[in-house]
Length: 466
Figure 1: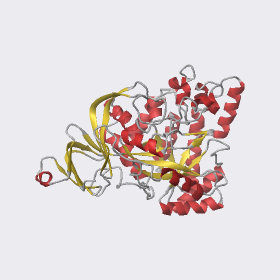
Figure 2: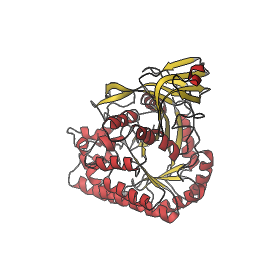
Figure 3: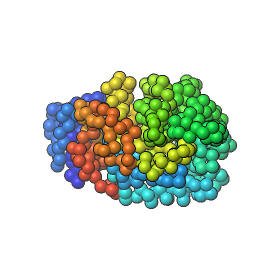
Figure 4: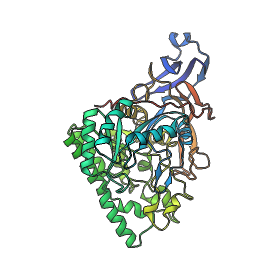
């Protein structure tokens, strides 16, 4: 690898600033920035120079919600850590934080070691882990402290999926109390799973088995109620809370009300809720199964509230919840029973492009794009300023982004290991041209030159908003 790389002539865009600057990279880190054409920039020498004229020079994306190789519903997510991180790089993402799973009856360590083994030596980009808590007890509460010391500083709990990941309010409270003590951040899947299961049973008994009923039984009010309850439990515990994949206006309102009180409550949404809707779930001939995820897609009118939440900072992060299942052989497991369709959508490759389109469509500003996709996720999960920005000392995770290139999103051309695209046929403007991870080229002018094993595990500090 060349020791010194110089990126010249581009517009550097971070969450804080936009400037025409050259970027000097040394030993995998950003050494300096200087105005293009200035005496400082002209004096620099490098082993390799990359011309970024006409392009944005942006920090690599940080996707803090992915599920590679996740076992779910009798099958497993179709992207491995190798295929999934390669696809992430193609989409301009240079760091993922995936979810290690504790199974009921298992120690956290056992689950975490399983995920370390899946990822080790296979990733094209850097990665970290959150820990899913499926079994809160005295032993696992103590283990939480040890994991925080190890750089696994966030823990996900589920108010949904009884019999699989579900925790009752008492267990949630105990985990939150522990995180208040050890500095960890509780991430919450906020849906009332007990009530949803009743509605699923009733819908199937009425013969309502199509994919669209997946969205109809997972009511907006049951997401809002669970969000409200999670906030109340976090207040009782004196703990911060991060609500994942917020999909509905009423849930955003709960977060906004909590934040107006000054509570350390945060929210994430995903591109599928911003760009897709129940219209997709209702597609005929079982095509709607492609769009089954939880929380579910909502009627289109919820999108305005999500965009508003991103502008007002009541929602701080856009992640993908990338959890791909092929239509053939996986999604099809739910033919005749929507409750058996594996929950999840592919998207790790599409997030940066879709959000750039949102800039062009006037939903968010250019800097806000970088804030919600790079800087804030890095800060939220203890990776900043190593990740999420372009500044001296930061890892040289850099994307050259062509804001004028046009593309059509399609399964024919994407790199995710899944047989359909959730955004098939969508025309967008903007495309990743070149990607560096710690100064090493992963994508070089639209050609993959990375390798499995380049990506390293990144231990994380605690949330930097507390």
